[in-house]
Length: 288
Image 1 (cartoon, rainbow, N blue to C red):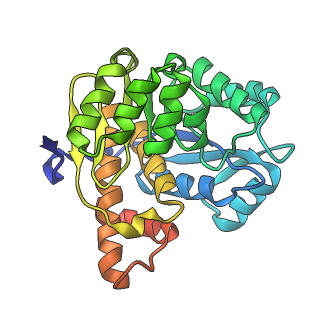
Image 2 (image 1 turned 135 degrees about the vertical axis):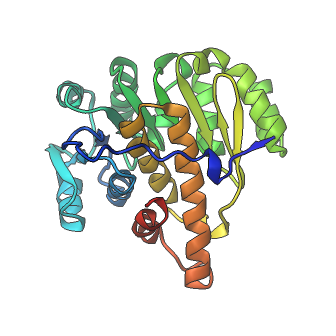
């Protein structure tokens, strides 16, 4: 097993004479009537990673809540409580000005939203970080230039959407050893990985599955089962990717920092009382 250590983490270089935009722009698309906080946490995490700008496209009530939460996040407001297929053209046009699309945080799973996610992932060719319900809406055939960040259940949806045989799915679901599990996943997703995609499988040990290698990231603790910690991870992936344009390195950085932050907060709070919002505040202190 190849375990990631601090020496494997490479923070994107920032030129002293860099100008606004040189360090990457992230367009974060998510939020719904049901989930307002997820996209805000992801957006702040992306900013804390060092990228220059994060713009959030969200249903208008969500976007106003994001504006109230942080003055650092720019928002574009869409009509309605959920994303619909008709919103795609606006997102695609806006994406022309951005380096990375972050999609899925708090976006929900109604039929129109699923169609929107599938179309966005398939037709936007720039770098993408795909998280949460967006993962459940797509298949391997839809993706290129992407980091997907599933937990075990989201991965099951993704593989089922990709028409993976149920016997193989059950074998993966029932496998407890992360080495065997991740190698099984790599074998059945090789064509997907060949199209410049990464699977960052979240767990007690994260598995970062790439075209040529699998990396494992230890750390973290049971406090990271709280809602929002995965949104922080996705935001970190997007922020690092906007700066470096390197999907594998961005996934390694994000997983390492996310787990490191959880362990630091466990000690600071002297238990499992820390929140995902505490995590975004800690990012700058360990990435400096």
